[in-house]
Amino acid sequence: MGAYVYFAQAPTGEVKIGFTTKHPLVRLETLSRKDYKLTLLRFIEVAERDQAIALERTLQLLLASEHIEREWFRNSPLMKKVIATLGFARNGCAPFFSQSRTGVPPVLDTEEV
Figure 1: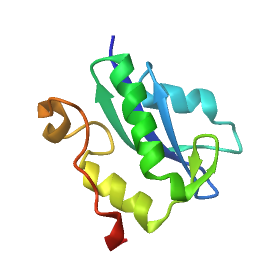
Figure 2: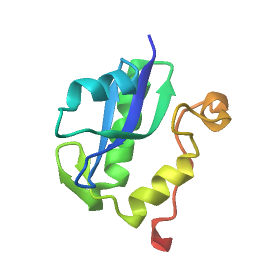
Figure 3: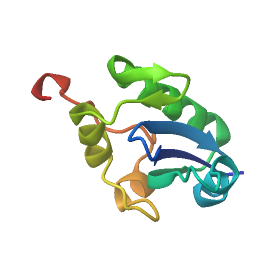
C-alpha cells in the first residue's frame, strides 16, 4: 500500500512534516477546523509505508534546527530550500521521485542557507 509524506502550513506560518496512508488532502481535512485550516504545500507519494516513514524522519532530522515541537517546524529559508530542492508540485510529485530508486532526495548544502 502506498503512503505520503507531506508539508502543510498552519495559518500562523509553521510547517508540519507529516506521514499518512490517506491522500494528504484527506488527512488535512481531519486536522483542520473551521477556524484553523491547514494548507497543503507539497507532498511525496512513496510506494511503501516503511519508506514514507523513513523519508519523513530523514526530512525532520534534516530540519532539526527549525524544529518547534512534535512535527512542527519554522518556515525558514532552509525549509523553503528543502521544499524547492525536492522538486515536486503542489498536487503531486515530479518525475524526480517517480524515477528515484531510493526515494531519497539529493543531499542539500545547508551552508548556503
